[in-house]
Length: 267
Image 1 (cartoon, one colour):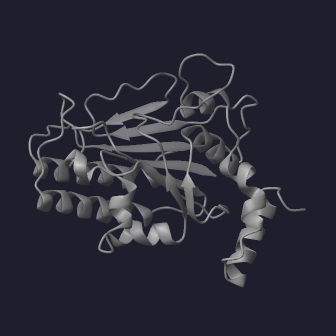
Image 2 (cartoon, rainbow, N blue to C red):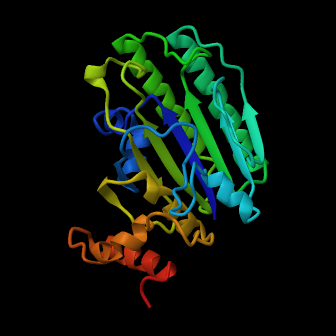
């Protein structure tokens, strides 16, 4: 299995939950697990390890087990630490909301080429509408909607080139006050959508810690877990709860049992 992260910085999960017209992401939510994340964690998935001071990222751990990582971004200010195997940046001259839309389209066009065309175990696509000064252009309400519609359409096109061997996590990262696409009164909740052919986590997962995300991706991908992850995977911590669900149709319950069995939770 391979891991694809779509990192939508400056957006919020509840914007997509609230709008039926953002149909591609809404349809993905309906067949996936989703939850809220605290605050913002920019530039990559930090891997919390109990005995390790400082910051490790998921690609640090993947490099240690000889897995290849690629990161694609339209951000001019992302600092990507080694041992990232490959970094692909695209020009970003953000001055207006229309520039954000053009940059978004260019980023996802490149991603659709990389997914089937390059060898990777971990691919992270960072959509970031900030300019080289770290600021987002002032958006009107209509311009925010146009940008979100573009995001939704581009994510939908990328989904079309994915196979069942890909674990997909879409991360919505609400930025600090004053840096979002909209005013602080409209700022939403950071969150994620997790989808894969072997994922038993379906529906609203509530509040989730960042520390749980990397162990979950490792488990679904079949990668060896780091023995000192600071948290368990979402699957390990909620296996009993998943099995006890009584709100599922019989066919849905059977699918979940099969997926838990495949992950070793049911004999």
